[in-house]
Length: 244
Image 1 (tube, rainbow, N blue to C red):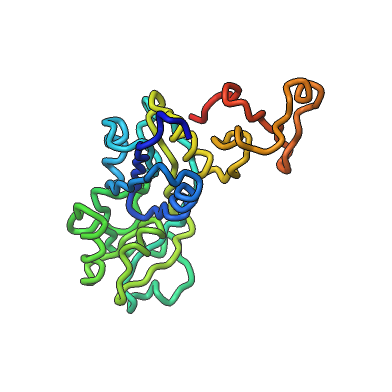
Image 2: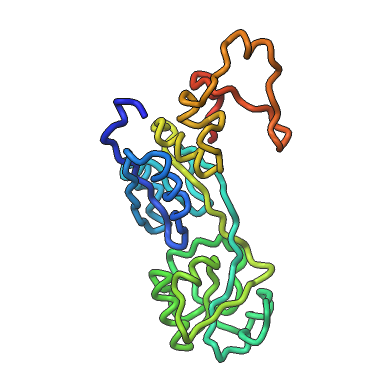
């Protein structure tokens, strides 16, 4: 860590359903002198939070307006339908959108799924939030389709959920303002991408034992890692293009 980073805090935003604990744990092990602060934000507000400087990086749900942002897609979530436990859907292992054609389906204003054609019958209201929609499902007023992590987040004993095999899916990504790609942001990118502490893009490579001399490096061909990609040298000035 450089003297200029001492005393800094890394602010990480995340949307509902994303659990950043595993990455935070790695951060605290590798950079114990830089506290990490978690900032919870609604999916519709996290991009504005990043642009306004309210967080250094954040987990978002795609699609987002990418102007001025660098974005790394991470994983795709299964879409599920949340139903009362006594609903007919609960008897199946999985369903299709056609199976929901006769049911009223809620589409809350904070819906994170991009629909080309919304399934089911239009419900009598558009709840403001997913949490409000869950309450309505529990009352028997209709069904709700959400990413699986949101179904788990809003778990209730009287509700269950089943995968919807042909529904659009929600993708989670890491995003940050391109013009604010600091060393700490680079550190977090490395953690999210699974780089080891001594990897070529890591911040601690300068402390790696038995560093090669320049003449030795010139005499050797670039090594290849297990994936068949050429390894990048550990010189910080040779990072190459940052992900966008």
